[in-house]
Image 1: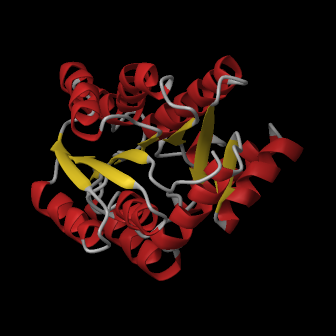
Image 2: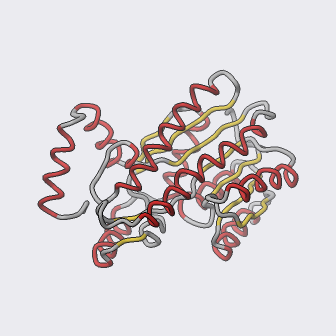
Image 3: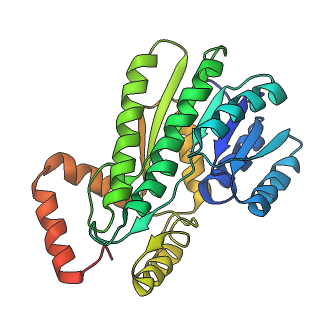
Length: 271
């Protein structure tokens, strides 16, 4: 993609965090926005910040796990904006706990949002993206889509799946004018930890404090994502811890997990 100027961008999970930062930066780069989330009030705040730039913005209250609503969303966006050139599948949730602690309901919830949300976005918007002279899909995976870590089995499963889907789509769409980028951030100051499901409230609070103190700002992450899309990169690894995990997995594909297991046995958590 050469530029975002006068492009129509759809962003899921746009009410806060990376989604809000992407919306604001895309507006500053001249894009129109179709913003999607389930949080009505927070989505309105994002939309107001975008509207203040003078760019056109529409809001859509949609659960990305709902196939029928996502199919209708694609038609609605095209009806209101006339076209779509950029799709950002950003909506995500998390569950923290051992595999035995995580319920099947937890798994259905996280798979519905993190995986089916991406599948629905790609499936229903791809026919419209094909109508554009140039288009791009951005799928939010994670550092947890590069390496499996304890207490994150369901999150890792969904983010590994998003990475695999993105790589397959990139190959299928190569040369078509539609690019695909898989995004792998480490710690980012978003609400995903605050909104996560967990069996250990104390551990969750400690993780929130660590994220607030050490994690990267969503604005920095958003800028790196947009630059990667403009360069048509297959994947972008963001944050120092994500890059360390990526290289450790490449260099020591089995050995790194022995280190992770020892750390988990010693400390009993990721922190």
